[in-house]
Image 1 (tube, rainbow, N blue to C red):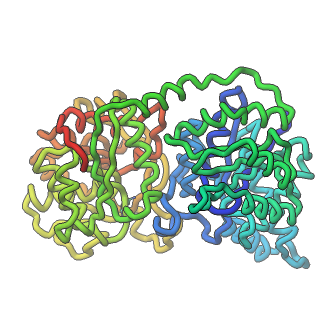
Image 2: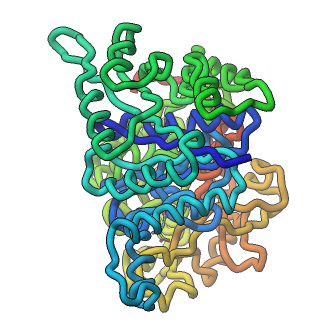
Image 3: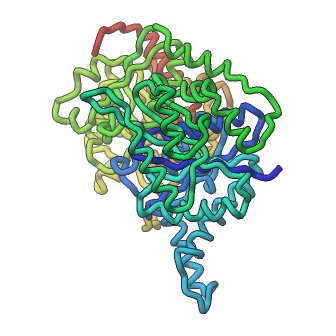
Length: 540
Ligand code: GLN
């Protein structure tokens, strides 16, 4: 079968849920028996988001092969339940780096290197890799940013060219826009959508489908108006009101006939009928009344919840598995150092310390770990969350007062967390951490082994520092259990505390492999322990 392409562009404003919509569309197509692949094109000049602050970009999502990618790839993996690879995300930075390297090598000797055709050719080459690598029948391709941005123009131009190369009948342009509401009258406006479609048409692309997003109900008249002004067929305007529950988006799209519309427009015949019953059940479960488990998330980028997207989703998945509601409160770790935010931590049923870099707020995270240990509050530590659990244990249980990670104190007499040997000679910051999937052997009889119910697992990593083995015996003697180790036994991957209901932490990031239908065992364990703690509180 010829590969078909679904190009998702965004209009009016960013953050309208283009990634979620593309992911949900992927699910509808997979459900109909198609082999689906996804790719995100990011117009910024960084080679990958790995060197950007989460404040700039939100979470850095890590894939099996260690690619550091856009958080939309997390949506794709969670909704479609696929494992993506490095070819699924590229940036302007990568496109230029490759083209300039070729120029220096002399690949274009004699030529002038230009955006068209050299940059657009490189963009098209990278798009082609997805089909080559995955053998997908349908490639969903999302262009980051908003139509009209200077940065995204070469990407859109490349798609325009590609449409002719793969055949117009094999491509669809889906434009996701936002319909604002005027506060005073409550009126929904379509004008910005008209303008963004005009901008798209000015570069030679007419959208085939418009997904109009809004917070309010969108009536038929508005859809007709959009169809008329934007020159799309009436049935190709899909009104998408903001969903109450994220995982409802595929159900809403299905109800609106989006799956069938796309197939009809691409001339495809489904090999089976979609069965959305499991998703319906999932959403019903999320919506029904149930007891609430309160989690204090002790972070550094708490103002921007996008920074912890996968952690938040993994907690939601674990809540569904435990038949509870999850309420997450975000506590700034630096506040805890100033005696602020403790009311939230003390009211919580569980404490979660996620990953992070740099010394700001680390002492607050260490205090949170101490609180969880001393008060037997369920605790889950992710990457840095494991490292601070070790530092706290060393200081307050073993009595090594100045223990620290050498990331935060180079001259600590007790570097219980130290730079990995492989990392010592590395000076470049981009893409040089210990990244991606590594195996981990679970020690029988531990909470971790019970949670996973498996002798070994593979999990995704993103770190430079590790547990310092010189301290392993001392830790063990006082009740720290090393429940997950690398196959050669040298790297500590999971730790847990004896005589504590659930104080578990991993050097890897379990949140990246949690799926709505396959909640991650370590998160399920945390929420279960929090639920069993049975502390019912009111509002917090
Ligand atoms: N900064 C720590 C390290 O590099 C932890 C990284 C993380 O939490 N992802 O080891």
